[in-house]
Structure formats: C-alpha cells, structure tokens
Length: 137
Image 1: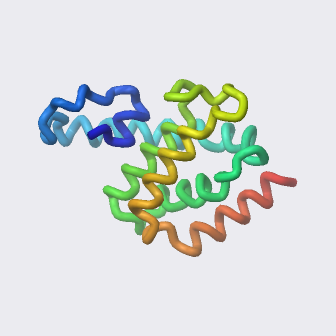
Image 2: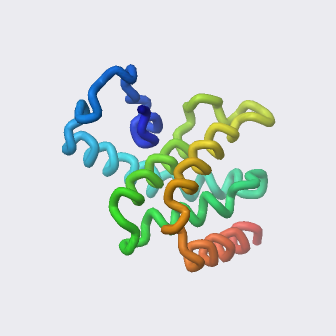
C-alpha cells in the first residue's frame, strides 16, 4: 500500500515490502519534511490558485486541521502528506495541465479527508472560509 506521505515524497515502494519495511524513524523524518514543505509552500500556492480550485475550502480546512495541536498525530501526518502532495510541483498529473492538473491533488485530499473527516472541525471549516474571504480581497 502506498502511504500518502510516501507518494508525496516520491518514495513509494514497489508494494512488495512488508508493512514494517519503513522504520518508524524514517516515517517521522518524512512527516517532518512534509510539515516543513507545507509550511513553506502552501500559502504561496493557495494564493495563486484558490480562485480556480473547487476544493480550496477543503484544502484550507485540512491545513488548519493539520496544524491544530489537538489533532491526533497520525491524522496530522496523513493530512500533511496530502498537503505536501498538493504543494509539490511534480506529481502524477502536473498542475499545469489544463483541466486535469489538480484532479490527482483533489483525489489524494478527498481520500485523506474521508478517512479522517471527524477530525476536521467546524472551527477548521470556519477558519478556511475566513481565509478564502481574505484571499479574495
């Protein structure tokens, strides 16, 4: 199984590795890299594309959930992996491909949010709506 944070980093295995193939330290290091990537690159990218993304509110709600210290660690790691996939310029379908560029990003985010929907709170959604309003100004 390809984990979102492995796919986001381009380090997904062949699928034949045992579940314990990736040491816990490696996963923690990847999560830290994903967090640093999202912190550095999320806002510039969302500013450029928010008006054209039908899932911008979900992206922002996921962002606020990922950086909420009350969010469980495993949920934060999965969401950060999905957000890192969004901010990385190279992914399954490059973002510059007209009409299709963000479909893979939306699919990754939707999958993670479906798994952890109970952790995205009304406060995260409200913060996302407020951020969208600010970005539209």
